[in-house]
Image 1 (cartoon, helix red, strand yellow):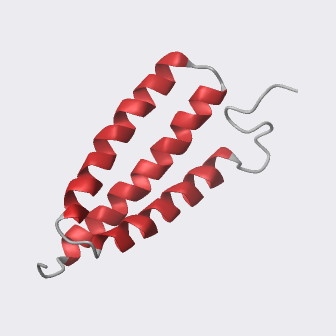
Image 2 (cartoon, one colour):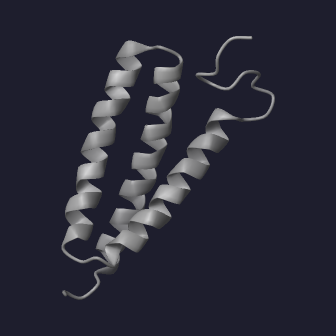
Length: 95
């Protein structure tokens, strides 16, 4: 097992945070039945996730950093989607 590289750990956190945020946006676009945004978010999602997978497969400890980034990304994107005073969340079904 190779030594832990702090820059790689930070990059994995950022990549997985971005990946989760993009996944939430992808799901929102799917729920809203918006084909082009859904396809675009999907392709960005795979590009970002590939960096995280390649980075942490050389050292299993990076999986913990991926989990941290995933939590951050989902929390921030859900905060953005459910901002107060914005009415119906982005991608929500019409009432």
